[in-house]
Image (cartoon, rainbow, N blue to C red; front, side, top):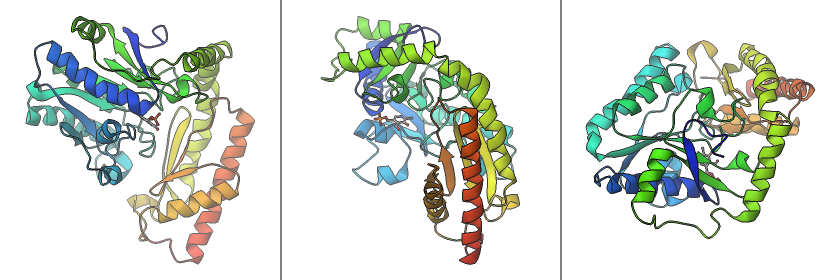
Length: 359
Ligand SMILES: Cc1ncc(COP(=O)(O)O)c(C=O)c1O
């Protein structure tokens, strides 16, 4: 992991899942600041509509309001700023301007809370479960500048983006981010066995190690069978050039075709990053308008049609998202696109018949 991870992210605290790893991160960043004599630096800033897991800590870091409604979340000392979701929230701004406005909300939140009270900012390079929200190109450089300018740690949640999904080993590589801590899971073992972890930079690891015992650990942290399977998985990814092929060949091929879906009358935006992509369904593309019917109901219908057509597309509200296997071939991408177009055509005519093609 130390060889693969960017920068000086050289130590790993393993866990059984991404959620557990994010719980570790909460305790680790607070313990880090306490060890440095700054115990008030506790608050972690996250983003609305982000996903960081289902444990109390993970779901609190996450910004999904439906999750917060169940179980008395979020736990204290976690705050959420706006997400960089240009299609839904960008209004009249162009995407780059909106990216800067969203990033600067981090700076405003640090100032509101007081830098002496903020431990870290956590974010996914591309929000996955939130609807494959690919941030405008201005967003991450500005976030990095703000984290550098203020005394806070940057936790990059790579549970979806890591291990080739964005066309490089990590989303941090794709967006040129320098994390202090990276959350990993999923692709580490390609899902064959459960494993997660926090990849930690030398500086944070040294402070934690110098602060006496970190009283933290799970029975299955670093489980030897999961680790053996992960090592074998990484070996295969490397030996078969899977990440390189995604980055250089198949993801650009998919992007070219996927972005053409934006020409369909039902699609307001098509966006893609590596092997994760979304289309926004709309009855009125020029206005990026939502449907008159309950949010998500059109997405649900489209999803059912898609599955009938042999294509797994998930719906997040009325956006349809895909996350194909990294080994998908070009001819399989052709099939994927054919089925997506068929699904859009059938969904569109069914909505028209039922009088639901209205803003
Ligand atoms: C970005 C992100 N973080 C954390 C998690 C939680 O990981 P797990 O389901 O392994 O607990 C997920 C799961 O989908 C995720 O997408």
